[in-house]
Structure formats: C-alpha cells, structure tokens
Length: 268
Image: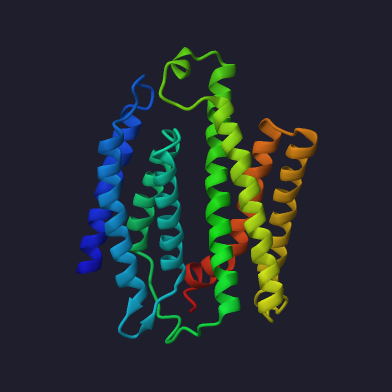
C-alpha cells in the first residue's frame, strides 16, 4: 500500500510539473520556476522514497530491471532539474517528467524480484558500476539536448516566429551544452570501460559479452563525435542523429538483455 501511494504521489506531481511547463512552453516569460521546482521536488522526493522502499526490503536487495530503470530515471530527473536552475531547459523538463510519470505507472504492472540477498562490497566493482551509471545518465541527458537542438533548429529553418519569442534557450547555447555533455559523458564511459576491464573478470564471458561489445560500439561512436567536433568542427543534423544512435546502442547494452530476460521471458 505504501509503494502504491508513493507511486501515485510521484506520478501526480510529475504530471502536474510537466503540464505546467508545457502550458507555457511558447510563452515569452516561460513557466514559473518556483512552481516547477515545487511540483518536481515533491515528485522527486516521493520517487526517492519509493526507490528506497522498493530496493531495500526485508528479504534482500531488489535490483530488478524495473528498479534499476527507476533509479536511473530518478538520477536523470534530478540532474535535469538541477541544470534548469541555472540554464534554460524548458523543452527538456516536460520530457523527463512525462517519462518518469509513465515509467512509474508501468512499473506497477511489471513483476519485481529479489535478485541479491546480500551486496558484496568490492571497491573496484562498485567503481565500475558507479561510473557506468553516471556515464549513462550524462549521455542520455546529452541525447535529450540533441533532440532539443534538432527541434529548435528545425523550427528556425521553417521560420516559425513563435520559436523566436518563446522561452526556449538560444540554439547556440543548446549546441554548446550538448557537446560539453557528450564530451564529459564519453570520458566517463571511457573510465567505466577501463575500470570494467581492470576490476571485472567476466567482461568477455558468454553472459556479458554482448554488453561489452555494444558498450564498445557506443563508445567508438561517441568518441568519434567528440574528436570530430573538436578537431574538424563537426556539427548539425548528422552529428545529432549519430549521438541519438549511439545512445540507443548504449541503452541496448545496459538494458537489452535484462529487458528480454526479466520482462518478456519472466526469468530472474
């Protein structure tokens, strides 16, 4: 009953925050930052409490696909909300809030399972996992910036005057932040992969090799974009599509097999 109530509270306030931002997306003054932060903070706190009660149970630690997805979603929401306090992120907020609200509802219909009875504290492994989560969050946020860049750029090319007088951030600012995030995310992903090869012995085992290969493919794509941008000035639609493609490959690496195994096949 507690988990259901927390899910409902988080869903309602994420939805309200998303509706508020969307309602004033093209208004010159934009959405009220105080109202947005108030609504989102209630949702974030409820989401966090839900995670604590879902993961840490009397029987052990539930690290199922659903809870890991909810955790990463929470990290992304907190990151984007924090960034919005300093930089314009009007187009990103309803996307992350809306996705979080949807994921919370979907999680009610997905079975959870206790995966670990105890957590083995291994510094090297914890470092690898932490870097992996952080890299994924940063690169997904970068991908959201890529989508925002594509949207604003397309509206400008169509000479849509509403975009000029809206509260959306300047295109050049979005582009600058996009490549900064991709660079930081690629550095973190590089560190995560190196730590994995150093501290983990199963990177090329049968059960994990597909994750390793897909992660390496994603890293190559991201690294190519970073070097291409900084050395050759790559930018524009092609680069944005490449970033989105790389993020898709990385998502498959992180969640593909677990989604098929736990959600589609019901195996834990």
